[in-house]
Image (cartoon, rainbow, N blue to C red; front, side, top):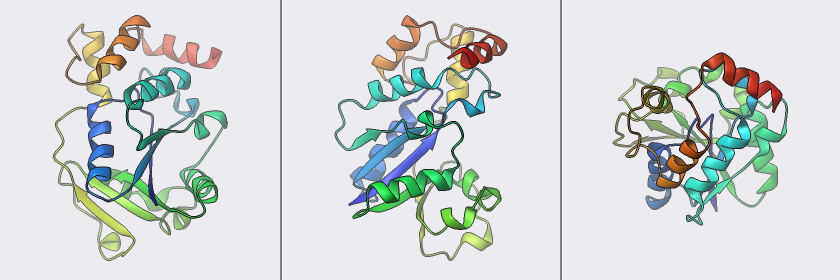
Length: 201
């Protein structure tokens, strides 16, 4: 089985995250995708809400898709690097092939990540969202596969901005995620307040 590891802050998860996962599955790049939200180590990011809430939204967004799983591996650990996450799933799914799903922007500076040589030994699926150029050193690596997906201009940043401006995000996130955001009044506070709450959780 081919298992894709899809990491990120997912702050919040949105329709394009789901489109990427479903596209890779339906086109045979992987058989399953595991969403792996980061822990609270990136509390400096704008309006980063607690890992528990981000995890909950991912579970809501993917609960009806048997081919998409959600892992709290990075949330349960204080500090986790990408290479550690990939090794964790490689050990957990010994009979399967682990794929690292990332964007072209990540690939182009992945060699600066901790133990990047380990990451680059894995099979990698690179999603080219904005026709970014590939660095020459990665062009001929046989374990890297490039996938062009037609993605609308949706991002978590845009969603958070729209919420603060009281603009609709109805077409940007699944209905149950929208309901959860509204019910919990998420992304409406200043970043300083969000960081304080993160540290308290």
